[in-house]
Length: 144
Image (cartoon, rainbow, N blue to C red):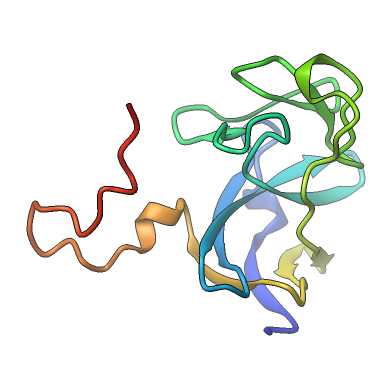
């Protein structure tokens, strides 16, 4: 797919919370990805907990909770190493976050993952272009 796509300035990735964008998977589905600032760079992780894939790690209200170098699942409390994605505690122990390849060059962040294609900045729902009326095009977005 796309060999290199500019995402944002490294300065725009906050110390806490991260920076959210959406990619298109090879099967055409959209997947949220978030950037987190590390001591020596930036990492990108797909926005779901390995314990329960419908649990988002990055939430619009607060971003990603990052404490002492770990990304905290807001539902279960599992902590994933922000550098490696590995989890050693809680329900997700023994799992690893799904990484997306990014590169930082001259203070700019680029998507360099061959397996996904950049869709847009922000949440997956921000890419919906069929908001011409108030009726949903699908009920798949509903949660009970």
